Amino acid sequence: MKRNPLRTQKIAFSFLLFSTLLIVLPVGFIVVEIILKGLPAINWQFLSDMPRQGMRAGGILPAIVGTLYLVSGAIIFALPIGVLAAIYLSEYAKDNLLNRMIKLSIVNLSGVPSVVYGLFGLALFVVFFKFGVSILSGSLTLGIMILPIIITASREALEAVPQSFREVSLSLGASKWQTIRNIVLPNAISGILTGTILGLGRAAGETAPILFTVAAFYLPRLPKSIFDQAMALPYHLYVISTQVPNVNEKIRYGTAFVLLVMVLFMNLVAIIIRSQFRKKKKW
Amino acid sequence: MNKFNIENLNIWLGSTQALKDVSLQIATNEILSVIGPANSGKTTFLRTLNRLNELELSFKMQGLVELEGNDIRKIDPEILRKKIGMVFAMPLPLPLTVFENVAYGARMHGQRNKKKLFEIVERSLKQAYIWEEMKDRLNESAFKLSGGQQQRLCIARTLAVEPEVILFDEPCSGLDPISTAKVEDTMVELKKSYTIILVTNNVKQAARVGDRTAFFLSGELVELDSTQKIFTAPVDKRTDGYIRGKFG
Image 1 (cartoon, chains in turn cyan, orange):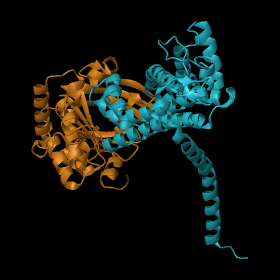
Image 2 (cartoon, helix red, strand yellow):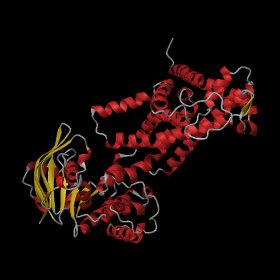
Image 3 (cartoon, chains in turn red, brown):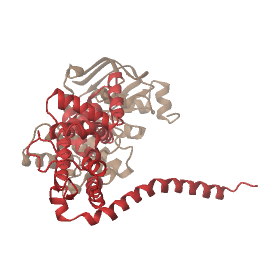
Image 4 (cartoon, helix red, strand yellow):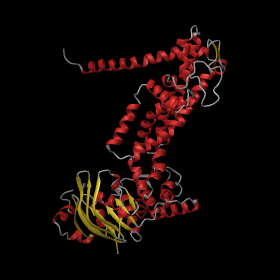
């Protein structure tokens, strides 16, 4: 049989399409399932009330608030450190063995399983620093977990700023820091923010790092200080799905829906920021 | 009086030697044209004078470069580069407005006064003969200008810092003939108050603009003489061959 390039292309094309569908379909199915089953549970009481009757009724307010606290804490801690480290690595660090090893380990750190971060947070923040099981410990643990993501994204954003801009600025007698502050950072900020928000999305959804460091099984009140325990959406979802018998399916899917919307919202913000800055980008 | 005194300058970029034992003096308020084929070390020579080469990690330097009798390696790079401005091969506006591009250097050197900044911008744009075209477009992005306008904006930006020396690195390589003529006129005009070193691929440009001309080949300074001499009676055969277009 003679080879028919057109047919070969068609076959290859269908395989590629099939693989893509294989990825997209399950995700789409999960999302649709959660929306269909979760949306009916959403009402003002569900979002603003305490859990009642052993979490079989009432709302999920403490979990929403807890997750917001944890995410804010993580960003307050991780964003400055991550950006400063990225500036050092991409602008100041010499290209030697030590720095190459540091860069490599940062990339590898983002692949460490989150439960390992949880144990690390338990040992360091809860036990060693005696912060106890608290929002502070949990935020720091989540912050450490997303640091590699922020550093890697920020480094890429900084390195994407053309070298010629730096040379022009230096050639006009600006110092290195002035160049970074006035030319490099403003043009890298969109990439840095995008990376940060994607990292936060991940932090909001993780269960393992908060399991030992902050998460409360059930708290009928809102946390009062950063040394309080708190509930969090992913852990709450785990609890009502596996630990508490006879929880109405509607509540479980409603919780999943809220978590999903929060993470999608953060990703959406990242996309909007990126496109806004891209419009303003002038080269 | 000599602006620069360069003795036995050797430069390595990585394992390749970019400049070999170059010695020359550059007088105050002259235009020195530097010609030579690609990879002859012209740009490396230029970027050594304002220490921009040092951004390359593999850069190594031997020999002496003096600015008015002071070793440039002992001068702060920021102060040195304030005295020695540079115009790059491609028009490289910063991602800022026209006004902010020109005001950038002054701002970095601590000028905060808005009125003073405006004076500096107006004076520099006039010096670069682009004020009339720019005065109504000061708040536009510099990327909206044409290539020729961008390059003259870059010249104005360099002038705004009030340097003593201006290094031109093939400033017309990306420009059309009319823009090139405008930039060349600007250079001749600037000669009155600045020392200019012009690296160019364009032999005719060197002949039109330069007081003296240096011919570089594979990192060596082959010949340096008055432009007229170089173009009418060069001593070295290789200079003659290059000028006549036999190679390069």
